[in-house]
Structures are given as C-alpha cells and as structure tokens.
Length: 271
Image (cartoon, rainbow, N blue to C red; front, side):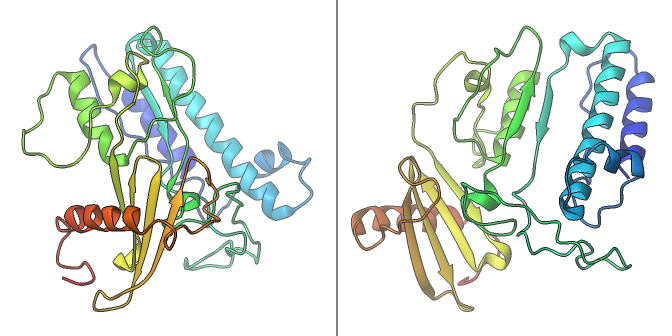
C-alpha cells in the first residue's frame, strides 16, 4: 500500500499543468498489519527486537516514498510554491498491541505498539499520548525554520487552508481557527482557546482551555463517574489529578464541555 499510494501521487503530480492543486496523500503506514520487504528491515538491522525492527522498517519505507512525492514536486518546478504538511492522526498503540490486530491473516505474534512517553496514554484514548502528535509544515520562503507549540486541532486545517486560498468561511461556522499567522511566525498564539476531544463511543471526553485540561469518564446513560484535571504546563505527563484541589477550574471546564458537546450528534452518551 505504501508503494501504491506514492506511485499514484507521483503520477498525479507529473500529469498536472500549472493550475493550483490540493493533494491529500493518506499513507496507511504506520499501521497494523505491518508487512515490509527485506531491504527495509535490513536498513534497521541495528534493532535486535524483531517487533521494533518491523515498525522501524515501516517508518523507513514511508519516509522513502514521501521523498519520491517531494521529488515529483521538484521535477515539475512546483516545490517553491507548494505548502507541504505532514501529519499523524493519533498516538501509538500500547506496546502490547498485536501485529495483526483485528485484521484477517496470520502476521505473527509481534507486539508492535510503541511508547508515547513522556505523554500518558495511547491511541483511542484522550490522554495526551493518544491525541497529541507532531506535525511538519514546509513552504520555502513562507515558513520560517523553527518550532511552534501553539495549541492546534485537526479541525483548524480547513479554515487555515481556506484562508491561504482566499476562501471566506461561513460566519456561523463553529469549528476551527485560521492559524496560518501563527504557523508562519507572523504572530504569537497568546490567546487561550478551548479544544474538545471525544473518546471512542463518547465514553470519555476531554476539554482543554489554556493549560488546564479536564477528562470526564461516563457510563452508558451519561452519568459522570470520574473527573481528572491536569495542568499541562506543569504536568505534561498527566500524573497529578488536581480535580479535588481546583473545584473552580473543574466547574469552568465542565461548563465549556457541556457547551461544545451540545453540538455533537445523538450518538453522544447522555443525549
């Protein structure tokens, strides 16, 4: 799949004229089941653990094919005027994740999950290890070299790209913020914002405002069974629950959670 996706992306780029374009390249790597040719495993022969070597081989393979896509942009003369964004959708599986997972077939009993430390938690959860991922933005002459730690959510990409394309979003659109001024280094992200994350089946939910983050766990029917409050600036690992010590902060975040989750559909627990 990695080679197939890259080949089609390269073919698409090379067949284009000069008109502006948007190309979405959703590699399935790195995702179970992992199947990699010997050369990618050999490139990671320094890793004795076969599970780690296989996972690294998948990463190396994807890295190579991304280079092929960027090479196509170079050959067409598009590179200098193309914004390239590399993203991940979630944190890694727990280390105990089986290689095959729920997929049919026998892929061996390798535990190919990973460790998200210093972040807590894994894929499908609402701790930072499940939802905080790195991203790379590259555009020669437009983006300065550096690092941004601004709070950004997946829903921000639509208004951000709309803004770059000169499209005006509907004034009543509730989701997302145009963060291009922050990403391009032209302004600072100095205004606290509220970010909402719903867990699988809406059994858990997280609401963040500024550096405070509240995680709520619910049973079927919507009854809250647990509340966890973390100061992400001081406790990125989410190790110290401050819910009892900061009832006022919990109350404020619960109000924000109720407001934003009211826009969810009827599948939400408690509706």
